[in-house]
Length: 391
Image 1 (cartoon, helix red, strand yellow):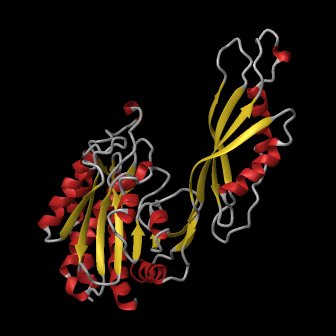
Image 2 (cartoon, one colour):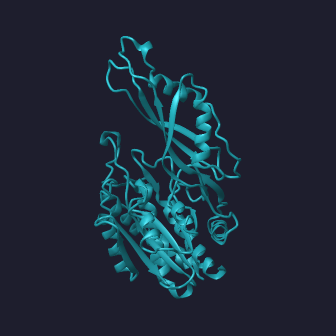
Image 3 (tube, helix red, strand yellow):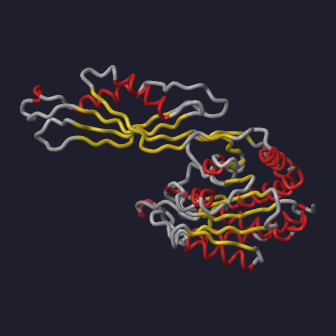
């Protein structure tokens, strides 16, 4: 395979990559409500211009997922998917550059979604353009996805695609970890939100000793919970579990001793732990609160996921990053969650890998480095070719 010729083509297409990224940023696909159809139209036009077969999937009108296919129907198949939705821009005055009118400066593209995840999506599309030229020399099906709803749980995106639309590749690369093309995400913590309800006894606030203040008990619980290390077995890649009290409610009126108060604790947990085991740890803390009466409820959760560090996809990425870009990729685990979770739960070997810095995701003046978008293409194209030979 003449990768030098392909890499020259990638270099010569830098302006097209920049403009494609800027086009995507200009579309206000803020989630909620999403409106991913606005950006999906750009992806559709790109696929049509480059002769790439595509299909559109929508669980709800306007929440558009679009998948392009190279070597459709071949086995095995590899999905590479970016997402089209973005988080709100926040206070516009906090931005030096306009969030939806992208600025290209000093080798970077500024704008909401430039790093999370429209720059990566544009790079995937440009890679698809090159892969289409050598389609007959590739031994696998390649699916290039631009999906919906990643920022708010993927109900209209990856969850829908794998559970309802039947999109079930054998492998997947998700360029949404902000690793600067230097890391492969092979493990992700679980996530559980636990509601802790504190019960007390009402009384007139002028006679507080006649009541039992649920807020006071809950405050004591929070204080005692803070230093506790949740029961777990150490993991070779993932850091220890974390917990954070993120929502609090309590009280009915300023002149009534509250008989109920509640918090929601967000826990990021490791393989081997469960929501039930975490609640058992919480109960041990609650037992130390004098006159405390508590109830614990699991609100929602995502399980921990991981793939083998020695699978073909990881090996191909590491080999080609070193061979063509002289990059030694490290294996990492994440405390946050990507759509790798939904894929791994379906038995799909999925890893996170891609350009950009997670330090600027969701921030004002979000940006992505153009050279990293180019570098990314030069790693994944030979990786996909090799994967077609090895599996």
